[in-house]
Length: 305
Image 1 (cartoon, rainbow, N blue to C red):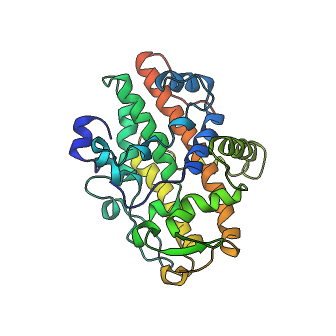
Image 2: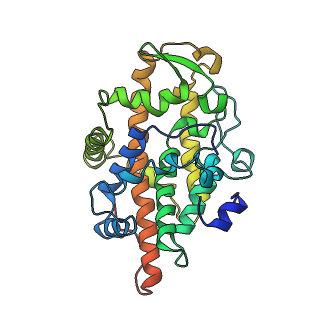
């Protein structure tokens, strides 16, 4: 596993080319996760994160972005993405050995902080910090341009979106999601919670109900690298089909607020739902395994989502 020496030594965590999901994406994904964890797991994280509020996960979902450029956390800057050196739209693929930087990437970071979350020798505040990174990096894995190298994950490709000149990464981070739910006014939390409630219903009884179990088919808690790579490959494939369907050069300067948005919106919606559902399953495993280490007789089986 590629993890920086300082990360291992300090037991913490943050140096990127691309910014993470916009606040709306991260917060909504965390809200969705909170709908699918068990009561025991909810209590576990509320205690760890020192919050009794319903938004105990959502409130920490963007923390990893807020500290990434601070002096102590600069080493985590590359942990938010993996640079797939592929050739969209002709070939989309991700390779861990080829694409994960020597000081880490989102794949190794998720594995590292998952391991830290289970470490009984770490102080509670360090395990809480690790949990915040896990919550954030699961979200990052589900934004297509966090799984692509072209033009620094789209940061160097300038397009128009409803008349505004923006880089492509920002469009996929924020613009599409915000327009999809009708816009955001002031703070994103009320809008994110409303969207998460809608997505939770879609997962349990709506359009995602029949596919939700397939979302967990690659989840192997004993092999976090393989799990994260499966999610990354799935997300990277969207670069060829939806993000750059005609290639990087063809999209430069294009207006993306029309037909492009109509095709991209459902992709963003599904990725937020997937990310939240998978986050719930991952957090469930961490909580159960950590508690099982304290109670030897406790079975290491997650409750059915």
